[in-house]
Image (cartoon, rainbow, N blue to C red; front, side):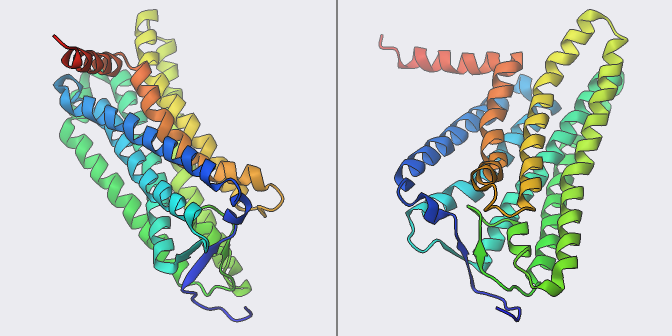
Length: 314
């Protein structure tokens, strides 16, 4: 197409590579999706059922689980439908809906991790004012602002992306991403492509990452000056957050970096990293918090013990 158009459909070109393995891949994807739902549902049930866990840190962990379920819902059902489909097409509105869900999930993941870092910073560096600064009402307000920010920002990005005239319809990904659609725009829109891509990456990933790194560096400095017991307790609560942050940052950075290159050169690597931020964090986050934080782990064990006793015949 020489002149830009507004196509009604986009075509996923990668699914034809897996036509002989699609049922095996479908089973694996279904298993991962069910595991994500189960693991995160357990975290949510335990946090909301146990009043002792109605604290800002645990509320933020439950928000992370909600966000992981939300992002997974934007990816897994659609990819399972596409694996079973022979056409592998997606309508223009559905494509932008998927972009909105996946990338508002991505933005929210970073904003929640940022709030977690701030929560630990206040708890460790300013413990006497912690309950005043991080009350449940304040935490709820922060989460509301974070949700509105993600929705507003992605709405703005999609508004500009949807106005670009496109000179192609083929998407070399397993799902609709903002960059995969923006890069289809005609040559006259190259500058707009770069501005949108840079602005989105900087705002959604790099700025929150720098803030989180700064926060944990400050926490480590405080810990070095404190007693061994205080240092142990502080690191015990911070370690799961740091692991989640590093896990998500590596996945999202690889996706951002590889999405700017031709996927034909690194096809398998590009496919793996393009879905990693949608698969690995939702699976690992509930495991990280469920296994590492004593209060959550204790309540999960109690839940399974009660379930076992209830099902045991008298």
